[in-house]
Length: 404
Image (tube, rainbow, N blue to C red; front, side):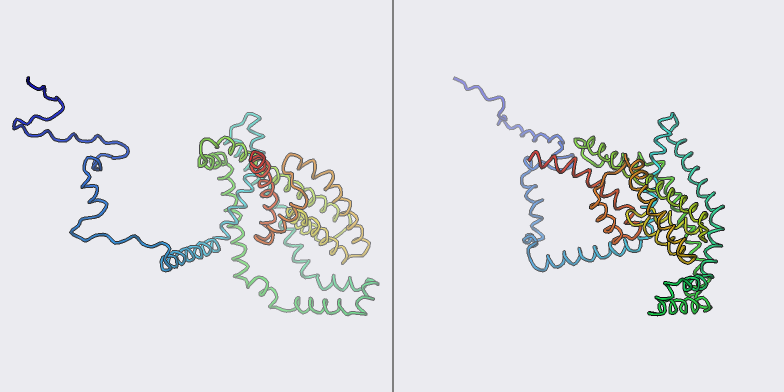
C-alpha cells in the first residue's frame, strides 16, 4: 500500500525548499523591521548587540548615589533657571495677566451685543472702540487737571501742614509731643531742596523713561486686550481640547461658568469703583476740598482693590479735608460711612448678584494672600480665582467624595 503524502510537507525529491513567507507589516512590526518570531537570532542580536563589540554591561543603577545626585543637581539647576526666567519676565507676565482679565471683563458686554444680533467681530470692535473713547476722553479732560493739581499739592504741602497746626487740639498735641513741628520742618526741607525732585523721579531722564514705559505698557495692554477679546473663544476651546474627550463636555461647562463669573466680577468691580470715584468727586466739589480730580482718581483706583481699597481712599480724602478744617474732615468721614453702607448693602449686591459668591472669610484671606504674593495685582485677581476654586470644589471634589 502506498502512503499518501501530506500536502503540507515539502517534497524531498531534490526540489529546493520554499522561502519563508515575508511577514506583512503590522502596527506591532512596521515595514522595514524584522519580525522577532520570523528571525529570532536577529532579535537576539538586536537586544544583545553585535558580539564583535563585546557584551553590554549592566544597566545604570538608578538607586546609586552618583545617579541620584546628578539628576537632583540637574533638576535644581533647571528649577533655578526657570525661576530666573519668570523673574525676568515678571513685568511682561503682569501685563499679560492684566490684559487677560480686562478681556474676560469685557466679554460679557461682547456677548450682550452678540445676543442683539451682531457678529463677534463687530461686537469686539464696538466694545474696543468704546474703551478707547473712554480712555481718550478721560486723558483729554482729567489728566491735565490731575497733573496741575498734583503739582500744586506737592508745592502747598508745607502750607497745608501750617494750616493744620492752627487747629486747637492739634496745637495741644503738638505742644506736648512736637510731632507737627518735626513733620513741618521735614516737609519744608524736602520742598526747598533742589535734589528732592531728582531723588523722587531719578532725574529728568528717569522721569522720561517712566513716562515712556507707562505709555508703552498701556499700549501693550490695549493690544493684548484686543487680541484676547477677539480670540477668547478660540483660546478657551484650544484649552478644552487638551482634556480627554470623555471629560471634555463637563470641563467645558465648568470652564465657561468660571470665565462668566470672573468676567462679571471684573466688570462689577470696575463699575463699583467708578461710581465711588464719581460720587467722591462731586462730594469734594461741594465741600470745597482741593485737588478733587486727583483724589477722585485715586479713590476710584483704590476702589478696585477688594475689601480695603475703598477704606484707604476714604481715609486719604478725610486727611486732605483735615488740612482745610475739622468740620470738612468730619463731613467727609460721615459721607464715606454712609456711602460704604449703601455700597455694601445696596450697590454691590445688585451689581455682583450674578458674578461670584465667596464667603467673607475666604475673600479676606484670598485678598491678603494675593496681595502678599503679587501686590495690588494679586489682590485684584485673588477673589475671582478663589471663586473658581470654590466652584471646582463644589462641583467636582465634593460629589466625588460623596460617591466614594
